Length: 145
Image (cartoon, rainbow, N blue to C red):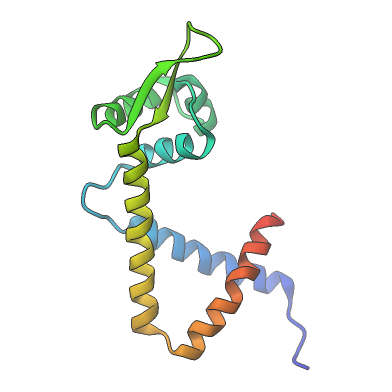
């Protein structure tokens, strides 16, 4: 067998590597790309479902005014729609439109393609197999945090 692995050192190395990977992918701009606050709000609405502007502001820990401006920009682009809350007719909730869902899908596909191109160009088949074997382990690690 091989030498024992120091979990602390491995944790530090993984955190550094994954952080750089995520940062580089997020920094890559694509045509028609949303601002970071727009991406965050749209993604949160997509994952968690309809919400009020105040709820989103609280979740993102930003001022209601900032969230309102972000949501207004998304609404002008047709990416978010407003409707009356079915549980409380006095409240307005915002939800991702079909166009907004398509923007998120396109963003995901573009980033996936970016990674696929880097993998194909810079890694050997053996290295790709190692990364493929590590992927489920990284998923499992994420589930335990």
